[in-house]
Image (tube, rainbow, N blue to C red; front, top):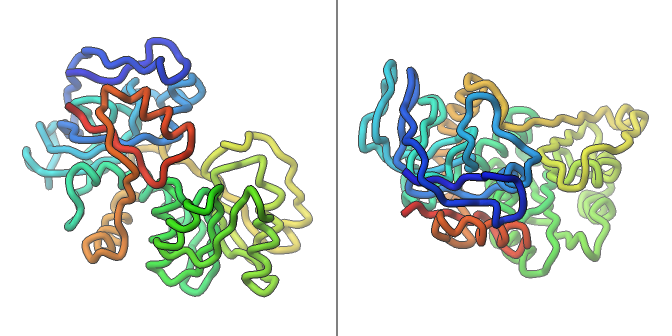
Length: 326
């Protein structure tokens, strides 16, 4: 088969489409013939040499894919060769074939085509696990998501609205904010021109956000705490704004607030399987009913992954950029 390899870390040109050995499913694993994968920020970090795959994972980038089951390892039940699926991966999605633990497979949702299903697993599992399983967003609460036009952001808006929350978003252009509004966002904040703390406070009568989903990390830590309501929950999922910042424990105590940080990639497969099962139970019906949908900015050939990485790094996209396997 062919896959996107990274012979040496670097810029987008470090991604090389090359012939590699076919993967073989082991016990409890499924071989998927890949139809499409999607570009995530973690893939860019891996390409740059900052985010190596966990032990035992595929060395190729790609944290999600869609495709068809090509073979079953021993001990796998509930799936058959030919099934159309999408999968949460620890790596290997930028390839024509990938092996995945059976617990990380999902059926392609009703009403979603096979290619676009590749835009779902990573963002849905990230949002559901952090916003609902950890931060426990509830109906009637106010939810703030930074980067509302991103793949994570566009899914977070839809899921929060589906459970009855009021949604605030930050984005860097009027066009991006318009797209967020179309998805249901109630409070639109241009972070280049407005102070999101002041805007969220004003929109909530001085209360603040009950849950914040943050991809920036250090740069936004202090202001995120300021923007929280009493008993608020800040869920950090990225470090685009740096790794280290000072936290005012007094401010956190005064608000009886919580700060959590959780990635997906390095979690044990049992934890990932639990997240995937929860997503199938709670989110897949919303997709089938049309309340939630994958937001795809564009489709690009998988062997043109360098160009796809440039698109994501330039941040001009809205939703997900897909890589379609030949």
